Image 1 (cartoon, rainbow, N blue to C red):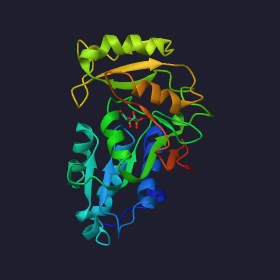
Image 2 (tube, protein in one colour):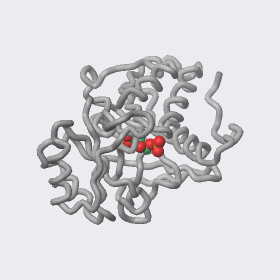
Image 3 (cartoon, protein in one colour):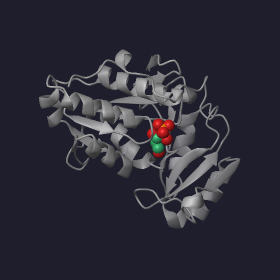
Image 4 (cartoon, rainbow, N blue to C red):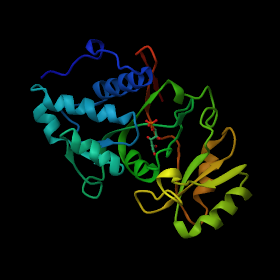
Length: 255
Ligand SMILES: O=C[C@H](O)[C@H](O)[C@H](O)COP(=O)(O)O
């Protein structure tokens, strides 16, 4: 099998899925150095599914298979482990591969400086561990994710914050003191009575601070609270964002 060109693929029934696929496929095509890269981060969410799928296509192509079979893929959570395994890729751990060549991951919102909100799918801590351990962090997303300027313009669910479970009351109170308009401990809804538990056995708080003109400063203040493990604000971390459009085109933003 040879890796199919993006143009030769029939569009998916859902335009949003076509947009995600176009962004992820192009990000993989343009950001892997098949000769020199060895350790690849694979993030979480519905867009990165197509990044893992594309890497799986390279694995089946005789021109690339020898190199891709040597790639060690580092996951950012349970879903991401399955994506790696289901596409026939080699699963590795960040304990044994602390330096990652390139990481691909989705985002909930992207500002004009490529700062991100992440964690809508509850995977933010491991995502940040992997993305900040990577030489290159490439974001893959669809057209709904690009903020005109500031974060929390389109993403209205608040900033996801991973916390130690026993600290949820204290952190909730402290976030309100920092100016949060609305703070909730994320609940499992009909799938689970009680809070969502992350892959690290922690809870998540979603805290709405309105539009974020200075996300770096807010990240620092939240991170300093006792009980906070990590915030879903990814500051000065991504170097490129591939944003897929409904018509199958992709806009690339570089820092
Ligand atoms: O916790 C989840 C992650 O940060 C995801 O990467 C983020 O929510 C984007 O997911 P999706 O690609 O499904 O929009």
